[in-house]
Length: 239
Image (tube, rainbow, N blue to C red; front, side, top):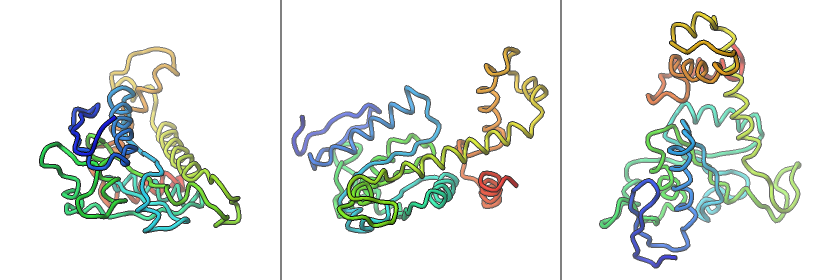
């Protein structure tokens, strides 16, 4: 347990000033992201949570909030959402918002110093992404409805975000396999220095190298506009 004013240390090593003990969910998300990166080797992160009432106040019950640090991941998410029939609105992440979660006694504060609760909560979580492509989905308003907002809904839990995440993974997988099919497997394996062995055992290493070579979403640098357009066409239209 903790009290207002406590300073705690997260799994990442970052210290956090606790100004709001009710904002505990973002503390769990922060450690979950660190675990995914350091223990599971996650190369990109999408977190989803019913995080803030501020998101409900801003967007209501039909649209979820979104924050991201990566344009390629944003593009992929938006197209996945379109295919899933779900709505997201991207919040800004200007430097002024980052300053709202600064602390004089810790690395971060778990509560904004000046409102903008949905934005600052997402930025707090994103501070633990360790420069990986990251996106945050706040489904506080869309995860539950007292009355149906869409024809496919009933009152109660909606399963918000599930279809979008499925379409995101499906799109990425389809692109990776298309890339795999287009490259001469044996030659590329030898040039990449991947050891000889059973076909399926070599496949993960081959895909990882292909992702690096082609600067797909996992790449640390931001893609150019031309790369984004090519990624969009290849991922969703196969051209």
